[in-house]
Length: 358
Ligand code: GCU
Image (cartoon, rainbow, N blue to C red; front, side, top):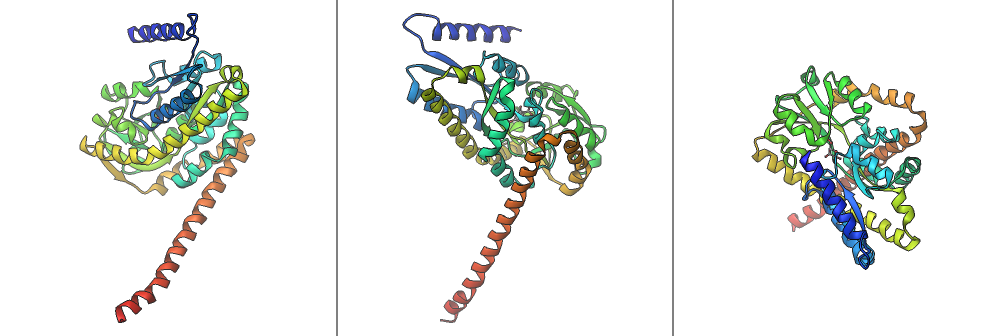
């Protein structure tokens, strides 16, 4: 309560300072997210802030609120819709609660590789399609952030699908994630990100599912010592903006904010893979064990959810098909690369022979 009260007072004071007194009329732009300050998403928002303030610093001051200090994302999205918070980084699963087109990304094994996933989410056609859908909901989707691959982690090892049976697994709020855990045979416990540590500690949960950063940034690896590479979900986060705010901007200002969104996206993506490598090393030093499993067994268990999704949402079939095309294109690109590599090595062999015979 105290924390919420203090945050509310801080926001009120900041708003007054930025827009309340004469002669000091910079507009505060609030950006909210739920990660810590070294997370790639925070770095993306810092790059956003720098870009906007370098171009429009006389008019706007960007304040980044990390660690869900403005509240859990499920709540802040309502503030964005109302125009009280200008920007928010939010997961696909949480957005699904306000626009079910985002439930596509909760489908397990939608993507066959992170390359296909990244090429699909960064395709401007994808962003346009989602943003058009969301516009009537009071917000616009202005950038996408990768969130890697989600895997299970628990207080006891998950080595086979059967090990999920009977486990209480935290999921992000949203029906698609609940359905996924049920299909795996576990008990789904929907919960906000910030509550997971306490629930793992007091035994309300046996495990959760997320990318490797949850082990270290959120310290879940203090309690859950087994991380299983079943690779069930690649689900991005989105930078969403309040339509009220975007509509209040002039054409020139809006262009600067759009450039900043793209810079944030590129910054986040560039930082991502390095931070996962670091997190994995850090988690090992916390005593977390990484377990490789037969991914096909896990995949087969939940594949019927794809048919269910298409039956429930024929209106999103175009997006589903585009995601599959990204998979196919990536597989073709990877095999063309392998072929080229083997041709190069075939060509280089005689040369090497020549050299050695000389
Ligand atoms: C990841 C993701 C967040 C999400 C969180 C969660 O950290 O990047 O957007 O909120 O998982 O599981 O709640």
